[in-house]
Length: 215
Image (cartoon, rainbow, N blue to C red):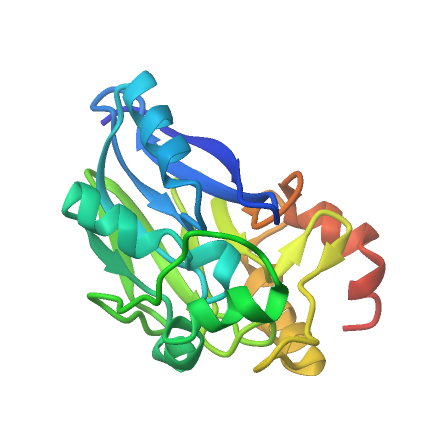
């Protein structure tokens, strides 16, 4: 087994961190949250000789899931996640484009497999634990690789901030509870990639993130 590696492709006008997780030796991996710009994603895969096994979604917002169906059809992949509580969001991605008034080639999404708290997903020998973390979106999940001390937290937690909760299905206290009960217990040394902007370490956020004071 080679080392777990990650590459980020900022996609769409939302500059979402579409993430490729892959094995350094086999060049096989998965893509997390292909929100759009599928042509750019495909070119990146070709240039880096990476073969995708699955598409993993953290939640059903347009900037994270808008390109998933097109990528699925193009490469013949399965869409895994998020939690079934995001069904309504995924069935209304095209409507989300109108709501945000963005000109994006997006399609509604039907996952091949929903994820639940405690599930595990993997590619090659790299295994990730699944945690259901609602608040930003009802069905939001995060992925944690315990061996590498690494998590993909989507839009639950950011470097210096947290996910917005003013969109349909969002709830501020529920998000704080998810961070307190699911994310922070992963450990201070855990590094993370998030849905937008730079990643960081959970310990730094626990100590310095102003939105986490008092939770």
